[in-house]
Image 1 (cartoon, one colour):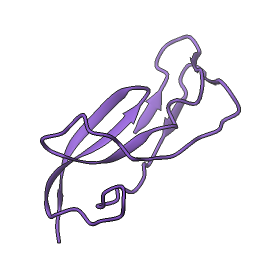
Image 2: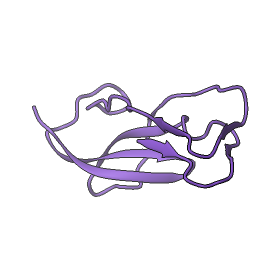
Image 3: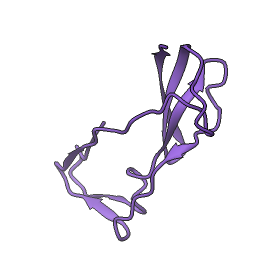
Image 4: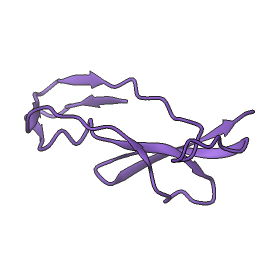
Length: 96
């Protein structure tokens, strides 16, 4: 993911929300399911992106297990990534 400020004004992320995401693999029939994986980012408060700023995030590893560590059954799933209540979904296949 790339975060860019293409405006002519500074843009402020009030609480490091861009970096504090929830994520996980969901059954295709449950795209609104709970995301049990996540990480916490502490950037010390609001962060301002100046005009022209660009940052790239390489992401994280989606574990092919449930919240208890049980391997997922092979098949089709949705990889979900949620930041500030907005969810991005894309199709993936778990193989044995």
